[in-house]
Length: 128
Length: 128
DNA sequence: GCTTGCCTTGACGTCGGCGTCAAGGCTTAC
DNA sequence: GTAAGCCTTGACGCCGACGTCAAGGCAAGC
Image (cartoon, rainbow over all chains, first blue to last red; front, side):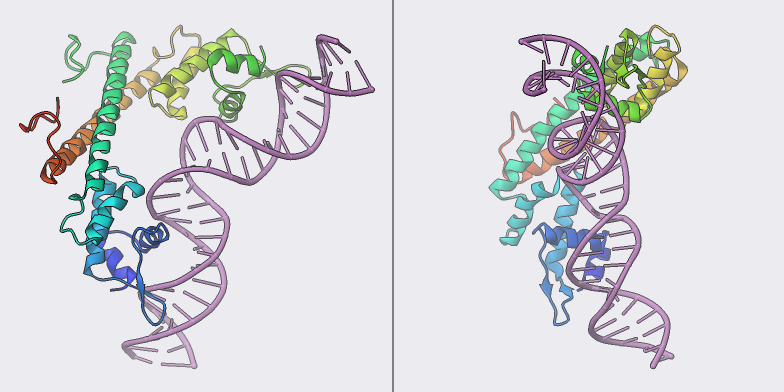
């Protein structure tokens, strides 16, 4: 499988795959003509990366999952390093969500005080 | 008041003020020597910008608030354009918070299934 | 032989909100 | 006079995850 096919099957672009390779995340074998060659396992790795990216993980955070898969584990998130990233991410998300909710509440208050009509009821039910 | 003093009083930098001016957000008068000159009202405008930035507004989103103040209103968020931005921001925040909570829940599930011990109880209490 | 379509590397562009450096000017204090 | 400390403009750097363009190579079909 060449780069174009892999990209298409994963719903991404060749540029993205070359970028991952440049980051050492998804290295490729090379054919006689210098073209990159991939197999099904690379598709699995790539899908792992893309799933985590969709969750908001940055590339470096996906590395433990990829290495876990490459080490032969059936799932990328069964290794300690991956689980540690999960935990860290949960904490980050909790922190971020909390901040956003605080901002949301503050803006709600300011909107109410600025003459904007209350969205549903004026009893301060910002969270619901 | 010159740029250094204004920056210090607002807890920001001269670079930031020049950047705002380059964006047309906070223009400055000029003294005989070409130095930027500001007054107390500029400090008010700047504080409005900074507050909204802290909320996660991007610069363009602060513009209606600044123009509202400059138009003579006592508060930057009493004008229709500002209120519209508030509303848009609330909707964006609700959307974003919802997505983050979904991701948080999904990661929680995966963590539980990957062998990570449950954080507090295993009854699926992700939201609390 | 020629076009089409894939591939290669390299390098610059994007976005936002500035940081940082360079080279110079003016004013005030000593 | 000169050093310190403010100011000026201009321009490049940064971060992340690529997009996009350029110039070229190789293979297959007509």
